Image 1 (cartoon, one colour):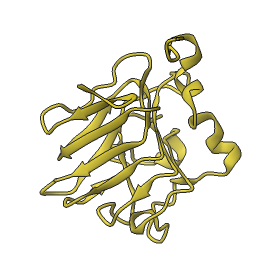
Image 2 (cartoon, one colour):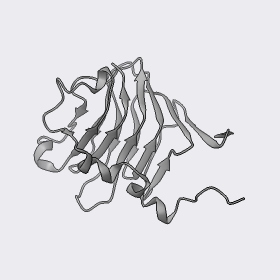
Image 3 (cartoon, helix red, strand yellow):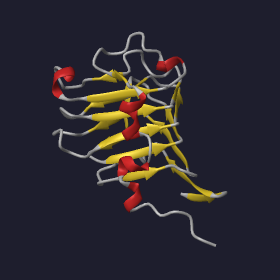
Image 4 (cartoon, one colour):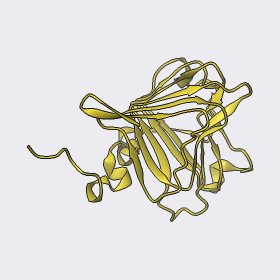
Length: 184
């Protein structure tokens, strides 16, 4: 990680896949979050994470998944939220694959290039994701990979009201642990 301008620059390389196993994580604000050259599960684990203004670049040689979120019970406060991010690259990807009966991932205001396959999401080992509690949603996304033609029937095209809990630092309870800028 290195400082840049007013914010920080977070850069995750090919072997540095993000592992959000913690209670909460936040990448964003005046930070440029770059997760580059991913080719398997870019971001995986049990954590509750918010990724804002992130650049995800797929170099997968076979179809891969950007996320594999592990959530086994509806009561678990976990999931991944991506806000104002960019998905691009040269390898085809699913937005996520269900690594648990209640896997939860939401993309909002995200540009999705043609590397996102039309189905968008993968149920992996969950036989009936629409009945299990898997929660995969998209809100106000754009680009060729955001086209809902071909999306799996159990993914959700969210309304503003449904997307609202995933859009800010309150999703990771940031008001209790994120520090504001230092006072001068």
